[in-house]
Image (cartoon, rainbow over the protein chains, first blue to last red):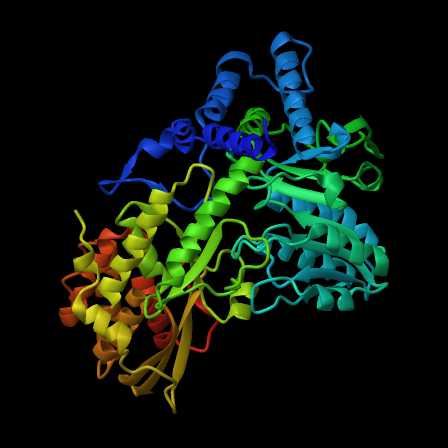
Length: 426
Length: 150
């Protein structure tokens, strides 16, 4: 077979494998109607939906083998513990972690980032030290650092973004210095979809400081293949509910030697080796950071979500979502009354399938109500990124965020919904 | 079944596009800010009291059609009212929004009735009541911290 013929065959096979209608059928909620219309779910950046296999895994755990993990010697406890730890192994493999002991289960990205701020940041920060963020951060990657800076006398700085909504790497580099102890940034911006070049950020950081690089990966993990080794960062945080997994479960990945040197975040059962009233001794990571009964069934469901993403193939998911993004931007560019702030028109850089738009003369909340009337779920507001909204000079935006199950037909429905907004608000 | 035409009536769209009494009132005797932390919208209400009578009311801020029109209509409705009457108007409007029959009849809401369609959109009720909570705070003394819808 000639090379072009082989490539064509590969392409055909890829297209055949990424069958969006078959994938949609895996998500029961997509069958429902909202206000007399078939649901068009474009709020995936806030929280995605779950495939039946994930729902079944959680239900199956509760129906057939649930017990507390790491506690009992009875059969159910053993089975629950095995399933919980197997999920940890699946997550480790999924993000390229060399060792599953580097995977800490948390309640979500927010708790993961608070954990790093308190257990890594607090012992390392002194008065005058700096925590360098970016202007595009979610509140969950701002407030934990403000809290630890109040406790330690360190200060929070934010590296600027360009008008095109991209991190200004030159100015970021210029803000790094020997007082920088932590660099914390999003892998993918939740409001703009901008994809930060983490390896470049790591390289700049290592050359100019001893700072740890903490990455908020909540918006990256469901949409692109992530390998923490290739990224080169020190910590990577993400949430189950945005990656088609259960709510209430999240992950903090950290380098083994860093985790090993960190004090616990929460105290309680399951994280100690010996307790007396004088002192306690703590277990090694990850148990040191998992005080109390963990979210066992959600963790098991997350393991299944990981398998679902792997079997669907993240490269194909990314390609599909990129096509939806191109389609959306193409149509929006033809509408002079729609602006997409912070999205470069030449689109030279990497973007995840998130579109934050504003419509002349119509507030995002009114847009959301009118779209909702047509069964279209989008998010209107500041997207927990008020400093970014200030930077873009808008109080709020309408955000459409795509997932693996969205279709080109839904892009067209969104656009006709925007025309309805225009008709009402004129 | 709710209908968008009931929500976005022409009067509401008109007050959204051309808000009345918009801007800082100078001099003012009281002001208060309303904040909806859910959406980030902020509306500031300025009042000038002449004894117990509302001599003037203005507002400023950025909000959706519902919150802007509600604030605009409110500043028109409250002007010239004696304090107890203004307080009764606030109570009646909030009762209309929450569908609370008690007190709804206390004051004739007149033009404000155009906002009654909002009660069919529960997540938008806070948009309509934002300015009214701020007005109540301003009447109670003003210059306090932002009142929130939460």
